[in-house]
Image (cartoon, rainbow over all chains, first blue to last red; front, top):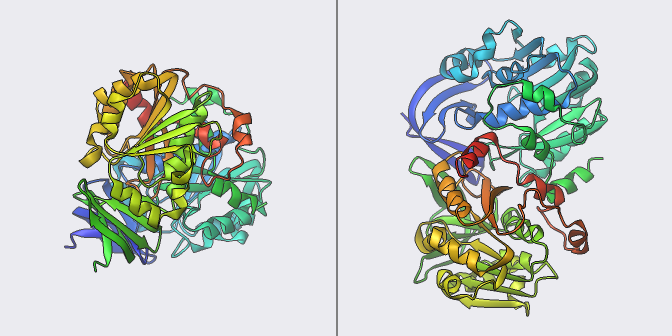
Length: 284
Length: 284
């Protein structure tokens, strides 16, 4: 057994975690899948050599990807998740009692199957009667879905290399806009930190800004990801989420305790470092 | 020559950067000093095997450590920096035209000498006539300084292992409080992320909360540090910086462009993830 898992952030930067135990190793028709137990971050999912999720810091990813858009929307009832095979985003979406249906389209059934087994804390949403789980191609689902059929679309895919590639192009986001209701929102991770690869973030923001009247970024802390500071992109057909009022009453009625997300964090997530403000000013 | 520099975040977690060039290697009477050139973060300072600063991401550290306290203070004129041998914090402090004197007490003259040579972008403050550089023991300086002699004290030391150890105890912060003016503030990094080592952050916050009427944390992004999300502790004898008004006019008069800090970032830096709010509630 390999003693360490090494992720290559670049040819000249690596992060390494000592493996306590290998829980699963396999190859689906889409990617290699490893689930390992580490000393520092608990159980980790690794797809094609890139760490996707850990038990220890998953709240900073799943809570933010779900709640920033859902609390920015006046009344989210139908939510589509593209990807998200580990179940964490689905779990957070279903914490909103107003959500009537959560459709999740994950391309890789083996990811769902193994995550349900090895990440039980993320899996609660799979048994919720409001969930419709589709193992299939998210891009095709979005292309074929009726107009105005979702209030929020969350894109929870891998990086733009591998099976997640189709989730990063303009044609995909044009269809996302089409299938959203009139005040609908979409959010996705940007896959890179703007300090390290500004051109990657800029390209994605420009795509969204060409389609959605209001486009912005929001930030979270995810130590296992490269740089630890993670940027999500948000496109809104309605209000600007940076200035729209926060639904305090709705938030307070949802009693679920959260490890990361709260009202102050929601507002703060839209504040951008000066170098990112400058990047965004090039995207108008 | 070693091909990679490896930092051990824990016995079971490492980060590695490929070395492009070694610019300096030496051993002072306090610590081992290495300055290397990396592909991803430019020039890096490493003390006793722990990375301290990089050209690429230094703004997230120096701008935040200096400006969050200085703009939280109504009129900072005399500023003390303990440590900060690379010069970055000094440079930012002197960007405030209202600062009449900046005293910097760095224990290790070799760090200052080598950083002035290899980090010219950080070194501007050393030649400013308002600067008094003392190569000596910061703890002794604080113990001996007259009452109410500084408006702001910035503690920019290494981790609590090695020469920075004395900067993390209650006796030190009692003297810091004594030498501060009546609405004075102090800030320091917490040396650990509260998700990974909550007890380290909790211990420091409890110390400060026992001495200062208003104690809080603020956050920044520093990819080269462990977890990438860096927490600073702030103790205020006067206003609570989280709720005191931001000096917009003063800020706008300071025309220096900044890579990280701005008004929105200042406010957002005080928003804490829920797990940190919980930690802070144990420190009251």
